[in-house]
Image 1 (cartoon, rainbow, N blue to C red):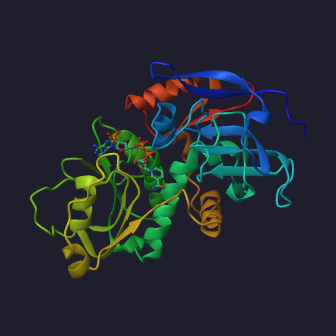
Image 2: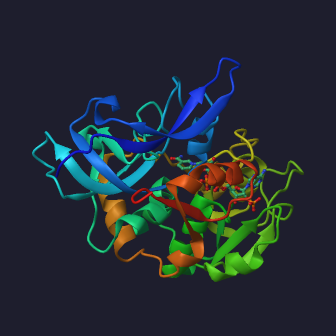
Length: 335
Ligand SMILES: NC(=O)c1ccc[n+]([C@@H]2O[C@H](COP(=O)([O-])OP(=O)(O)OC[C@H]3O[C@@H](n4cnc5c(N)ncnc54)[C@H](OP(=O)(O)O)[C@@H]3O)[C@@H](O)[C@H]2O)c1
């Protein structure tokens, strides 16, 4: 495969007034960081972390100019690693992609071979990006909950942040594999959407939040997939049934966890931390295999909005305004 002289990428620059501006620019392969594998990006996706990177959050991206995009799916264009050859279909998510390494908002990326996952059979590049880091994190959360012994017959599973990227896919996978899902709905009424993607019951943030201070509440949940943290996660743990497992991956509501030990020592509740970024490669490949086969969601269309590279900046603004639902994928070719 011939490498192009130039390609397009969304580049974020810091102005002299410390503002962060973004524009589509022409880049060269030589501008990319060192690495073993050059990938032509066919699709990327939009995640909360991309918004942080695109708006100058130094906790995510230290140096600008920078091309964000923590997810990419495409075709190997060049490789110095014998595990990959030009034409291979691959997925690259997590590690440092899009953070301090030029990411999937460019039509080409260059990364270490250790970051590259062969695209499993049964999954196209666009489909892989509907999942992306958000979907991978949802699947990793579900996998951990199941590994802890929570079975569909044990009772309802609570998913918070259910209209978001991670939450939507967690609701969908759980419902597909036979779990009865209760979804927490946030500010706008998204009942129809949540039912369409498989939620059996929907509760409000108020109903999912109990701040009366009692260490244990009525046993309600056999499992929980939490994406928001704070009082909702605390309440889920305090209302978890005996032996329940609750996963924790995000902090959109709060990073605090006001809690005591009683749910753990009196009900044997398990709290499982989820980190998609440095998830070991054997587990990473196993989770992508599940996504491509028995956990593949039939209603991907319902969750997905597709946009072009030219429309990406507007989509970033939409997510910044909190008006984003489900998953947005970006087609990186022919634009
Ligand atoms: N640990 C990991 O490896 C990993 C990987 C990926 C993501 N994450 C984290 O997971 C979280 C979710 O990511 P995402 O991509 O799904 O984000 P997202 O698409 O922006 O969704 C966030 C969801 O949280 C809800 N929400 C927002 N503010 C809330 C509040 N104050 N209380 C309760 N719910 C609230 C929103 O609900 P409404 O729209 O209904 O208001 C929305 O459904 C983020 O914190 C992200 O950083 C972690």
